[in-house]
Length: 134
Image (tube, rainbow, N blue to C red; front, side, top):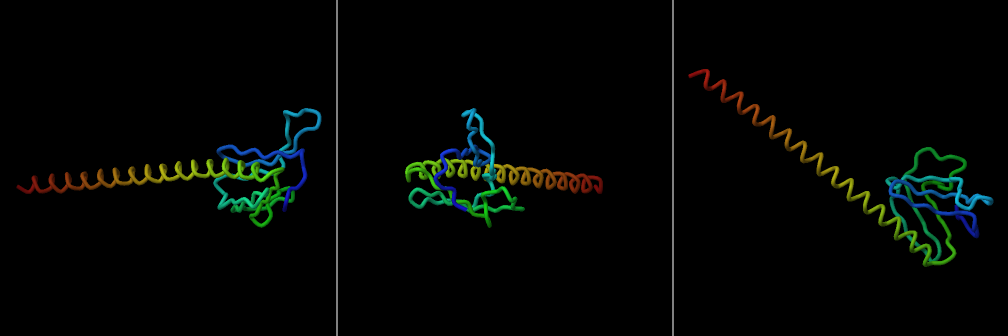
């Protein structure tokens, strides 16, 4: 699905989600969200001139969603605007991957500490049993 020639649509990218919204005609600072995509579900994105293509893992598709078969394409007024949107999206994706890596390393460190704790507890138990035998 390609969004074209729509000046009333805006793309909002935050650290957790990407939104496509329609600007309220009477209140310019208000929008109605039409589609939301979790940043963590995005697999890849690329630009092609003034178009930003996004591929994502999506669960149940809704009839109101712009995401069709895991794909979303957005046309911008200029190629520079599409590149800027991709750059912002890439920045949030990189931050999410760094955070995920840190979480995984933290979990691994906790597992090692737990393993070390159990090993030392077993060693103390064996030492205590050996001392009792004397």
